[in-house]
Image (cartoon, rainbow, N blue to C red; front, side, top):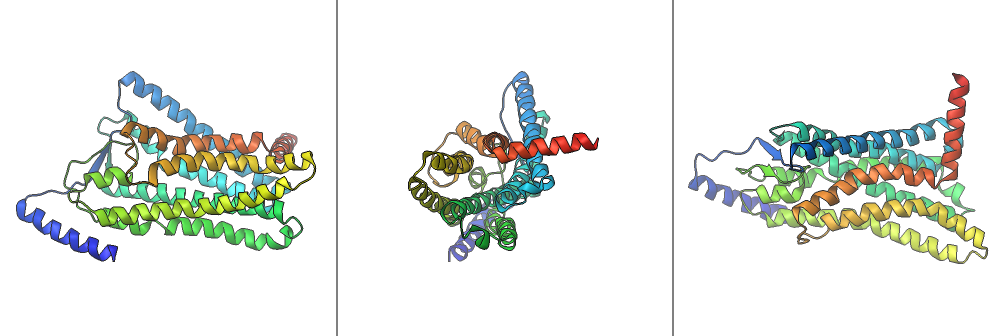
Length: 330
């Protein structure tokens, strides 16, 4: 119904626009302002973002290689973690390289098609990340609350199915909202005060109001964010209840340390995500929106390898084994 109403409103509005201005031109490219400032500040920002990007690739790449090379980590928990690290590499690569190019560019332009392709991959990868965090929480729930049944439930087959579902469903969620937004008329101006093609600024640039499309997109965002989040919350509520029943302090500490890394990542990712996309009337200043987006799109992927590796004895032991094996082979 929303889509039908939106199509009717769009058709009527386009007719009015064309009758008012028969020479109206639609934009073929957008200008991403990014973080404007003096050249010295731009150079510093370029260097900082480049270092963050390279460290993120290195850290997550190491996790992927460790999980692949060390047979001790060929378990569901670390298979999920390896896929999550691989996802983070592509997630940060969907925005940061273009941001770096834009910082050095004088025009700072991105084509209409390029803008919506970035929109699609950035949000699809972000959605996939939400699904993986939910699956990883479910895996921890099974391991702690149902340890005797864990091997029979979380089999290799189920693990592969869950991984495939996360990847496929993440990329199937956003075509409809992106098609709806791309069909809006953009007749100028074409300046996006952001470093990514985000739905908020795109709605602001449309020549006609599109309340039905905005409602569909914000509802979609809320479902994608809150669905996995409630699943994570439910899993860890059950985990917390089970851990508090453990009689020994050492047992509780071990259980909490197993889940601590994942909870830190969930808190950092979802905290910033909800501020940005859950409420259509959040009213965050443009500068704050850029900072929040930078946190969950660049800083979080950088911190994830540190959180998972420094707090995880198995990962540190596997890294030593892999490095020792490679050294001996050489």
